[in-house]
Length: 482
Length: 70
Image: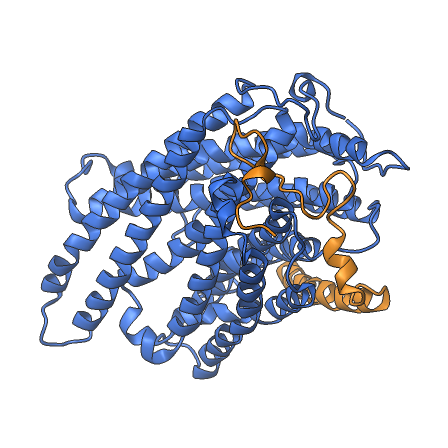
């Protein structure tokens, strides 16, 4: 396994094959792990969802109580599925865009293994009652050192590739990747130091918590997701981005505004009004980067929507990009005090969060894995039918989930703001929407099982060998990397 | 000063410095010029503009099914 190395005057097919081959072991390791945590987190999601309308379900064991199952679902999806799929995609994209071999392959594979240990250990800790109860940082403090150390390896690999890059121009996706790989580790270390280091207590802890939690999406998942769309959308279509100027404007305005938005989660809370107003202003300013992305993606796709029938990658990333627009505009409006007074503490917020992490980021990661994996293994995906089951299961599942909980959440909020309605009546009225959540979960789980079967066949090299591999030789997974 | 403050303020400084440095570097090295060329930088002779690069497994040629592509 070698350090980052650039290429001389090889034909393009040579550099592409070598870059993809160098990524094979680390990226496949991250993808396989991600799919495992996706399935694990899905089971926990179903259990938690059923408990919302049928509280007696699996109530005999402490470790299966809602207060433990739900945070394990959240953390396995965030740190297991989302982050591992994101890191795999980030590494491949950075190598492709820099046109250099992936460096630090062995440390990255070891890092992947340790990351799995961290997610498993943290999950067991929560299930055995040792969670921290700090949302999105529920793993006990000690595990954060492990994740921070692995972030350093990912950061180093990314910087090494950038410094050895063969292409002078820094493509817009690379800006987004730097946003995630440089800023999120700082944020993670900072939040852990403040919250677990006892500097932030009381309402300050809550402010720090939501500043961090909101930026998990804003400075980690969003930049990786948008970097992926900005690369794959033009590559799949075979046409450049509609407005490159807008794409860069979108990145820099996101860098400027997103970091401020987190305190809108505490509208109505016992914090200084100015602090919450800053969060609201930051949220509303997000209209600028989101509009640039929405216009750019739509205009790039315009006249080419028929390709959605042809390309599985395109289906997922276009749906993901559309979800990004909707969830971002929704988030900006939701931060306004008048809207927040109704939607806060309701299922509406849960629907919104899932549209962001699932409808946007997860869909984009599915699309990325469909594009990247055949280039690493030299194999085709084994079944178009299973891909369609995956797509329609997850797309319909997400639609049912979002519509049900959004509408149910608004009704719930209006009822809770009405002093004439008893609280238990409010709870009773939400039951149909909670059942719709479980139904949606079953659809999503069906899609995930189909995806896991496809991934299993892909990574055990059971798919048909690609006639003329565009990049990776078929021997890559059998020892040809490097 | 407590080590925890060093971590906090060090992180704040690094966080802001990377953004400012990145923007200054981008302007000084001409990254903010020639947007048309920048958009084309992900294409090359092997995967040129006009080539569709993804299709369902078993498809003969994705570009043949490109539908309403010009």
